[in-house]
View 1 (cartoon, rainbow, N blue to C red):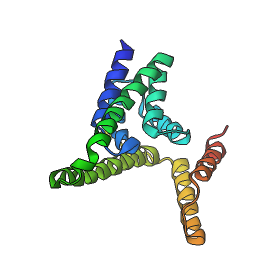
View 2: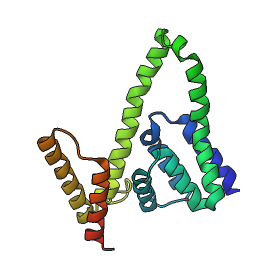
View 3: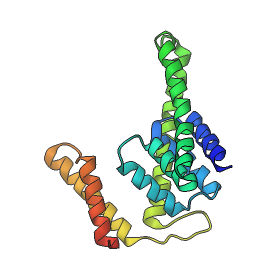
View 4: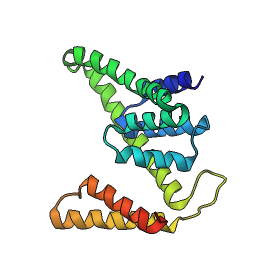
Length: 190
């Protein structure tokens, strides 16, 4: 039954992911592509929509993927699955955190987890860049660069650098999303 699968898989993703939504992307990708729930292109679109809508990325992704597979109840099961581990862990950590942080072992564990989170986010970003910009999907495929995607990426990066140079700070994420949407309409048509 799809509802149980959605709940269980997103429960595992929520329980085994560190680093928030960005840290989860690689596990979500592996799960949804491995189960045939989404194609690579659909998954990338779901990330874009999840990032563009209000709320945490992980919850948005679980909700959208669940809805695509099982409608309202699928969205509910996937969302509950991804949220439940964090909810329980936060309750436990909040009740004992002050006492645990004084132990060197706890700080050592957290010190070891941080680089892992960075590596997972970086690996996901590289995979997404290779897939989106260069059309590379795996070892047996060739690079098929997408000129429009590369153009949008270069324009957004140039805008980001220009804003940092002029204003001393990065442009608003909302502005970048709106500009991205406009460039998408311009390059891919409405």
